[in-house]
Amino acid sequence: MPKKSMETLTESMFYVLMAFSKRPMCGIEVTEYIERKTSGRVLMGPATLYTILGKFEKEKYIREVEVVGRKRTYCITQKGYDAYKEEVARLKQCILDAEGADDFEREETEEMLPSAALSPV
Amino acid sequence: MSEKKLKKCYRLPPCPPYDVEGTESWLSDMARDGWLLAEDGLFLGVATFEKSVPVEMTYRLTVAENGTSMWGENNGDPDADEIEHSAMYGWEYIAKRGDFHVYRSAKPMLRELNTDPEVQAIALKELKKRQRGSWLEWIFWIVYFIVRYAKSRIFTTMLYAKTWFMLLAFGVLLWFLINSIVRAVHYRKLRNKLQEQGRLDSGKNWRSGAAKYHIGRFTRYVLVIALVMIFMVNISSTVLGENEIPISEFSEEPPFATIADFAEGEYELQNYGSWGNNVIHWSDWLAPECWRWHEIAKVRTENGTLDGGLYIDYYETAAPWIANIIAKEYYKVARWDKDFEIFEAELPEGNFAACYYDEIHIPTMILQRGNVVINVSFIQYGEGYVMSFEEWTAIVGEYLGK
Image 1 (cartoon, rainbow over the protein chains, first blue to last red):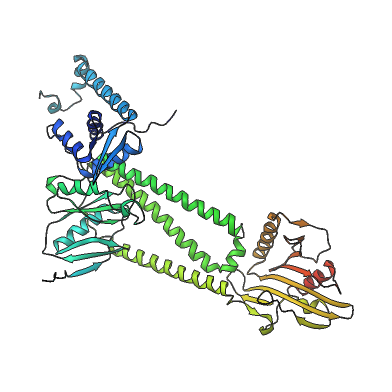
Image 2 (image 1 turned 90 degrees about the vertical axis):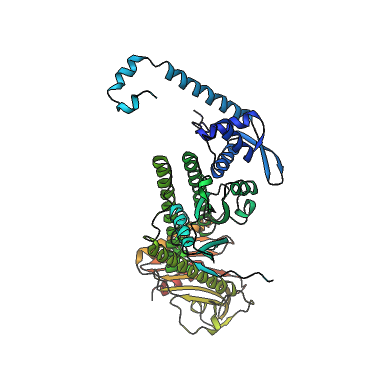
């Protein structure tokens, strides 16, 4: 079986791919996009961002399209877009699984969990 | 007005380059003492600091994806885009060390450089892969060297290069290898910490292992410098032929037969410029007596003139088994030559005896008896008296070990 390039995307990686799925961007634009999109919940540090960009470039999820001065612009590749769509589908399935979990299953686990974890949010 | 020169101080880092937490902690402590790391202030294992007021400064080491070699991309510095982006959040790129870029910030609360520990762990994993690549490169070159140059002549190479020197080189190589393993283990620990705790400990006590690290580093530097110097001296001595003594000026009696012993008559060395007629005599742990004898001479005998060149490698080893291994090594190497040709002849008695024509068709004999081994080739180009192979090898055998 061929080895998968990246088993699962981390949250930061997912948002970086999401940003590139909209349009080509440079690093700063990616950071700003993610901040805006998550209302400041996900703050991307520069070292994290550039590690992800390097990794994605190696994996051919993105490619450099323009260098203007210090600014490097990247766009998503088909491989990257497929990985993004796959991750979206996986996350959707997670949500569906969570919503479809019935009360019987919850009763079963109720005794095993601390009361705080079961209290309504 | 001329710019006032900043007061500087120089320090040896108290921890290895792969100790991310120790380095961050040490640099922050130096800043608290009023010493800020200078720009590009980590070079050749020495850190340069500039005097400032004591300040709370946070240092961070980030994995240099493309390495930090000054011959690499961006001279080993981060991409200009990355430097500018980091500066937006108050992080100033300051230097590089080992596999890392060093940033600092007086206001780190703006935003951390690394916000995703999983991504940080992935970067450390990439480093491990890169290291594995460099190990494979090392192994390739060592194997290549052995196959291409040493050709399995391990013992004879050790004798010629000196056993203690080879052991020293091997020790240094082993040290580097162990250091690489320690580094890989350390990176794994950092990755585990990132996965378990979500962050590294930038306040680590770097003082605890500092003395041990300094001693280790000093010893390694001394060994490497000594090794390089000895190697250079050896190479220059070999190239300049400083170890070679002309036979005409050599007063010691060799412990083996030479052309003068092959036949009675008027003996005369032949002059072929710097080629031939010299001897190298040295001692080694494995073989207290080592000789390399190149002689071109003629002997005017009653039966005519014996004219030839004699090439001898002779060893008296510390134990017979070493002599036996050396004899077999000579034979094995000779067999690899495409022009190697074995022939039948009656040879003197010994624990190991073999004869063959070498790559330029010179009849050669390898003879080991006890702790003595000789590899001798004798080419005769006179038209006068020509000795048979059995004749001259019998004389060599007669003299061996006497």
